[in-house]
Length: 286
Image (tube, rainbow, N blue to C red; front, side, top):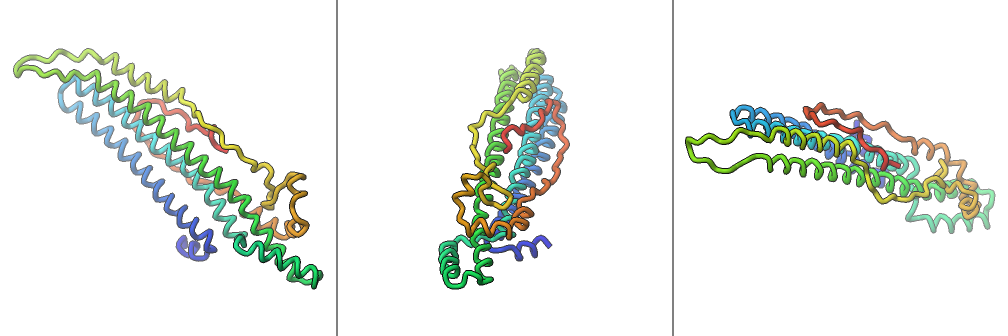
């Protein structure tokens, strides 16, 4: 059925339909990577314990915690990408419901002017006016495109910054492992860095908890866009042609339905990390 729906889409929305479907596969890959990373982290901890070396056992266990948290961040990223994908769906629905006549906009306007002069009562006039207003669907498209990729890039930055944070603490753990060669038969000094290793995890937990996004705002004038995809402010309405204003009522119901948001899918992955996971930041969302 999904394939049939794609075939039935207008050409412009069909391209976006294909892109949204590809994004779904990409999101699934991030979720799979999250599960695999968490599993590998657990395997690292188990292996370290089996070595019988106290130093390796302690460090590998704590490395596993950080690696598991890295896996959790992949899942958070996937959830944030679902928000971005939901906005793309809104664009697709709008394009499908009110397919714009961008290439013929000037031609339609000329035909309207000629028809108003020759046959002002013609029923074809209403049809042409509707097509002209449908071309203004690009108002919503621009707004939603900015919103979608604002979410996408903000999520990418969050994932990258938290990965860097965790990786730096992982390197701190490696510095606690003494790899000085010993003569066969000699006894290696007992591992005495347990407290410092635990402090690294505490620092990582605190850094994640205190992390906040620092993003350059992306301004939007979306508040001036009415449900009919036309400017809603008095000044903007004044600049709209009488033809456009008269045709607004004929397409308002269809465009309002097209602008309804869709509920994103819930995607949950259970992890084994002991580092506290902060709530996903939403301060960058529109």
